[in-house]
Picture (cartoon, rainbow, N blue to C red):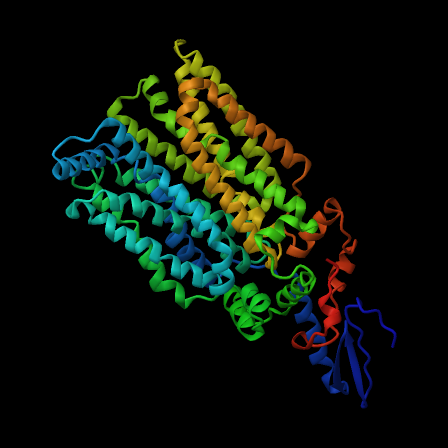
Length: 554
């Protein structure tokens, strides 16, 4: 009939003879007028499914909770757990050394061993980030999370029994292994949840891991209080509790589906992908999402399976790669660790009693949790770009004002301004700098390059974290409060870059986001939305694509 391929549907009815119904490229034989009512009902059903928005089903909600609690929670917990019992753990180091060698440990050796105990965690995180690509491509997203629990349960048992075994070396080694667990989970959980979520919930799902990181930090602060487990008898239990979320995930996660995108695009198993998608969405008609995934698969055939080296040399993803590097560096080099380091002294200068500082610190952690929870609900309404700009902007202003307040602390009301700056900084970091960069990695890369992008982003994250841990003590000694001007400068540069380069990605498919970056990368993709839908034609079944179809616009 010469019907254009983008035409939604054309119906031809006769009284008795068979006729053809054309819908896009598909053809269906309908027998006579007795089938007219059924055909029109099908059309209405088809139209409603197009307009249907994804929702948070029970299955999607449970798998989000189990993945985030079992993995992301541990990351936050292990960041903070070693701070409160530090004096008692140092005594244990010294006592063990004295029993072995008959002399007290020197201050230099103690400082070196404790620095290793703290800094080996981000170093392990860097090693874990390097393992992300090979593991998620070989074992899948869910499989990687299940295997990753081994890097938590075994160290938890060893650290929990280290005092009885009278060995402090095992704590240092286990901090590296726990870091590997955190490095894997900090990358795999956002990837897993982002690939399973509908596009209207993708931002919220991407922020949930950060929410559980902040909850983990808060729980460690509460349990580490002197009257709970922050004591000479309680610290081994405090260190060993990190294995509990991992054990829960190991028991529960096998009953939930793998990422449908991984199953379809990387494993080529359309039936399992469709079954997983139906469980996650709570309805049977998932053909639209399946089609979108097929188009993404076809569009990225020219890229092939991307390694980190290929990602750095591929022109079509140049600005996406630069963007995640800038955002991840900005996240860690913006001074979040320095603010927490100064927090205790800021509270004491404001008149908080030394014994009560731990409660105020926990209160700051609670503010962090509340603001990250707020980000979960507003990220899909306000957008990623707005929260990034607002978050880094607030951090920049807070650092500048905090520098002034710390230098003028002799003025009576300045310590209170310092507290306000700390809380403002925590709010800014929670809604933007901490929460959003991982969401952007999910959305700015297609399936074939996403694992390599997470390897790069995770490596930058952990190396920056490790660098701040190494140099901050020297910065603090040499610059004092003026070190916050450096961190404020990092925030300002990041804000300028995001404002100029980074696009808004909310409510867009991965293909639409990819197209929005194409012009900046100097490549050509279909310009209109209709062309974007049509440029990967499916005139033959998906399982029988020919070689011509594999050459996409990319």
